[in-house]
Image (cartoon, rainbow, N blue to C red; front, side, top):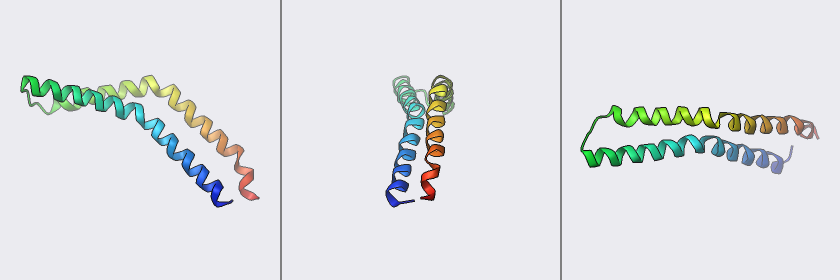
Length: 89
């Protein structure tokens, strides 16, 4: 295994992690900003009002983007297993 091979696998893994986390993080960010704007306009400072909508948004994002995320993970795993014989050279 060469250093280039290991760096390529590491780069692909980091890109995969960013792609898998982005939809949930972005949706949580948007919902959080909207809730904070709503709180500042109405002057309601309830702590549960910030967490519950974000949790619901992240769960819905996981349900909606789940098949896509699973497909990315399985493609990455298959590619790693196909490249496994190259590690012994």
